[in-house]
Length: 387
Image 1 (spheres, rainbow, N blue to C red):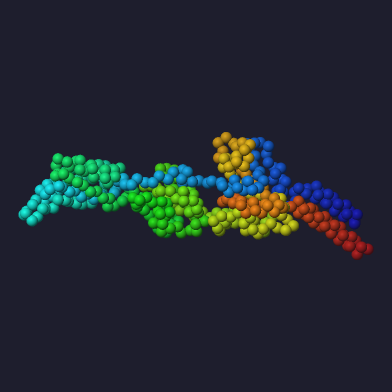
Image 2 (image 1 turned 90 degrees about the horizontal axis):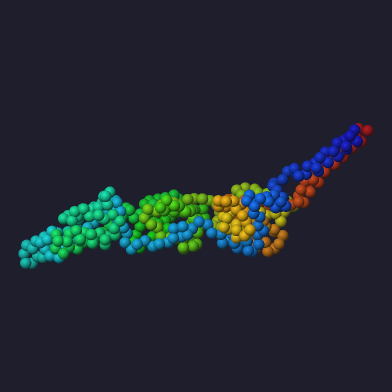
């Protein structure tokens, strides 16, 4: 019986060793990640060994930009009138006794030489009414343009007329602010020009932490989303707001996912403005002793085609593709790698993977051998006891 048990154990051990590639594991080994790269240039992912040059390229990665998409043109000195705006018109004449001035009743009185027309709303046809001038088209004009138009239509009717036009109710020159702000509203834009942060401040500011907030600007049917921190850090992104713009503050917590031989496998929030690879490993509980392969630290990410070509000028992307799957590989055996890891910024939705060390696979095999040996030993003890 003992001999049969020994033969059975040996057979089981042989089968186990033959199938060692099927041992339980948290993911591929470092060499497998590299070996699994397809030879097809159009479909393979790109593996990049992180060094100082690569860390610098990635750090200078440029995301969407308000200035890059919309420019930063300062609004005109005078705002243009639109439908729904409130307009107040005051007309003066050079002498009494005219259309808009009262007659002289005595030698001590010069009479009134002006009249203020009650506030009017610009109609759908873009016009207002001025007595004796009729309908005056004001849509798209500035206050000085409207003044000149009124004077032209009154010339020959009034005594050397002069006009003053003010916008009493600003409806068309507004921007809409919504989302994660204290008080979303239509914000009137001032003549001096208002930038994105000015308008957000007028809406009471954002409610979420800066590092969790992104700002979307919708203008003329095009939209761009930029992290709030990027607007604060780079004044060029704090562009002028134009009438009709829609600004939305979005709470968008940044996260990455940690897998493999780390102290914690989870979706981990940044909880700060920026997280480096070094900090990401620490947030994940570090690399496990006796399990983690220091040569197998990876970041999985989709990168824009232009950036992928900076990383590897020979890279060929699929026709029409805008992104390329990139695997950044870091060896933590080299002390310089820790400096590079500190300079390498994580991006939202990155995957951090630390592979198991090859020795860990050997330990699993030895554990299996120990289990089988224990079974044989137990059988021998039982056999001797029975005898």
